[in-house]
Length: 80
Image 1 (spheres, one colour):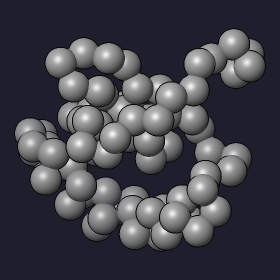
Image 2 (cartoon, helix red, strand yellow; image 1 turned 180 degrees about the horizontal axis):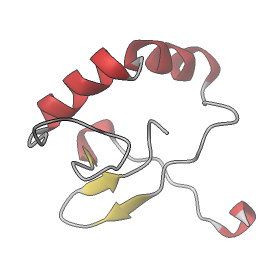
Image 3 (cartoon, one colour; image 1 turned 120 degrees about the vertical axis):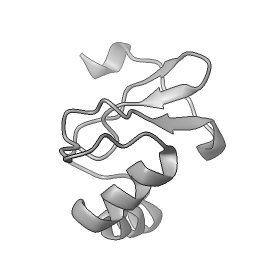
Protein backbone atom coordinates (compact mmCIF):
# COMPACT_ATOMS: atom_id res chain seq x y z
CA UNK A 1 0.00 0.00 0.00
CA UNK A 2 2.70 2.52 0.95
CA UNK A 3 4.56 2.03 -2.32
CA UNK A 4 1.89 4.17 -4.02
CA UNK A 5 2.46 7.13 -1.71
CA UNK A 6 4.60 10.03 -2.89
CA UNK A 7 7.21 10.96 -0.29
CA UNK A 8 8.19 14.59 0.16
CA UNK A 9 10.26 16.50 2.65
CA UNK A 10 8.28 19.04 4.64
CA UNK A 11 10.01 21.89 6.43
CA UNK A 12 9.50 21.75 10.17
CA UNK A 13 8.20 25.33 10.14
CA UNK A 14 5.39 24.19 7.82
CA UNK A 15 4.05 21.49 10.13
CA UNK A 16 1.08 22.20 12.40
CA UNK A 17 0.19 19.54 14.94
CA UNK A 18 -3.45 18.49 14.99
CA UNK A 19 -5.23 19.82 18.08
CA UNK A 20 -7.98 17.23 17.52
CA UNK A 21 -5.63 14.22 17.60
CA UNK A 22 -7.55 11.54 19.55
CA UNK A 23 -4.32 10.39 21.22
CA UNK A 24 -4.14 13.68 23.12
CA UNK A 25 -6.40 13.32 26.14
CA UNK A 26 -6.68 16.33 28.45
CA UNK A 27 -9.26 17.91 30.73
CA UNK A 28 -8.99 21.19 28.82
CA UNK A 29 -8.44 21.43 25.07
CA UNK A 30 -4.97 22.25 23.81
CA UNK A 31 -5.46 25.27 21.60
CA UNK A 32 -1.94 26.26 20.56
CA UNK A 33 1.05 24.56 19.02
CA UNK A 34 3.02 25.38 22.18
CA UNK A 35 0.40 23.63 24.34
CA UNK A 36 0.51 20.54 22.12
CA UNK A 37 4.31 20.34 22.15
CA UNK A 38 4.36 20.80 25.94
CA UNK A 39 1.82 18.00 26.31
CA UNK A 40 3.89 15.72 24.09
CA UNK A 41 7.05 16.41 26.13
CA UNK A 42 5.25 15.76 29.41
CA UNK A 43 3.16 12.74 28.40
CA UNK A 44 4.48 11.10 25.24
CA UNK A 45 8.30 10.98 25.58
CA UNK A 46 8.77 13.53 22.81
CA UNK A 47 12.45 14.05 23.64
CA UNK A 48 13.24 10.34 23.18
CA UNK A 49 11.25 10.32 19.94
CA UNK A 50 13.19 13.31 18.58
CA UNK A 51 16.53 11.75 19.52
CA UNK A 52 15.59 8.50 17.79
CA UNK A 53 14.60 10.30 14.61
CA UNK A 54 17.80 12.39 14.70
CA UNK A 55 20.08 9.38 15.19
CA UNK A 56 18.29 6.82 12.98
CA UNK A 57 16.58 9.08 10.47
CA UNK A 58 13.23 7.37 11.07
CA UNK A 59 11.02 5.79 13.68
CA UNK A 60 11.01 2.23 12.40
CA UNK A 61 7.87 0.24 13.10
CA UNK A 62 5.80 3.28 14.04
CA UNK A 63 2.73 4.58 12.32
CA UNK A 64 3.64 6.83 9.43
CA UNK A 65 2.64 10.50 9.60
CA UNK A 66 0.19 11.60 6.95
CA UNK A 67 0.41 15.35 6.44
CA UNK A 68 -2.28 17.03 4.42
CA UNK A 69 -1.92 20.32 2.61
CA UNK A 70 -4.19 23.04 3.92
CA UNK A 71 -3.32 26.57 4.96
CA UNK A 72 -0.56 24.83 6.87
CA UNK A 73 0.54 21.22 6.75
CA UNK A 74 -1.25 19.22 9.42
CA UNK A 75 0.70 16.24 10.76
CA UNK A 76 -2.01 14.18 12.35
CA UNK A 77 -0.23 11.01 13.45
CA UNK A 78 3.34 12.04 14.05
CA UNK A 79 3.57 10.68 17.57
CA UNK A 80 1.49 7.53 17.20
